[in-house]
Amino acid sequence: MPTPTLPPNDIASALPAVSDADRLIRVGHIVGVHGIRGEVRIKADDPEAPWADHLDGVFAVHPKQPQNRVYMRIVTCRRPGKNRLILSLDALFDRTTAEKWVGSELLALEQQLPAPPENTWRIGDLVDLPAATAAGGRIGVVSAVYESGGQDYLEIQLDCNQETLLIPFLEHFVPDVRADGLLLANLDDFLEEAMAGTPTADPSAP
Image (cartoon, rainbow, N blue to C red; front, side, top):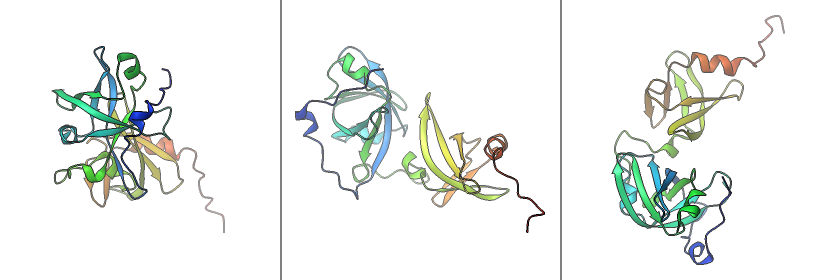
């Protein structure tokens, strides 16, 4: 897929002021194009996607240009189903332009988002949380969250050897999420692979 060009100067100049202290939260990503007018299909991180009804715009980050954030104003929003949105964004004015942005993450300023319901978590809140198993205690920390094929994955950096695990963010593997960390389960195969290259301590060493 071609790397997208940045939008016209008059659109880029509408970028809201963002300071180093501001936190951008991922709210979804573009999964496809709808129709010929540049509307895009969005998979929202939050099934209810309350942000879509009151935000003026979102920041789009293309996977081929992760260092660039492009602010796009929301013109219209429709909800064809749970977790799914169809947005018209001012920078995507036709189907050809919109197709170049498929796969992009959408971010919003944290202070502009409604607080998540009790006992629920934004995807971005999981990064840097410690990860533990019921049997062995802490094993590492969540270093990143990725999306592929409609499924979110947690990258866990292990304390023991700095290797990483990539596990599906499903209840089978992550049965509990709390403010102080994640509880992981059913990781034997993941851990075995990650530990394969870890040197075994020599018991005869002083």
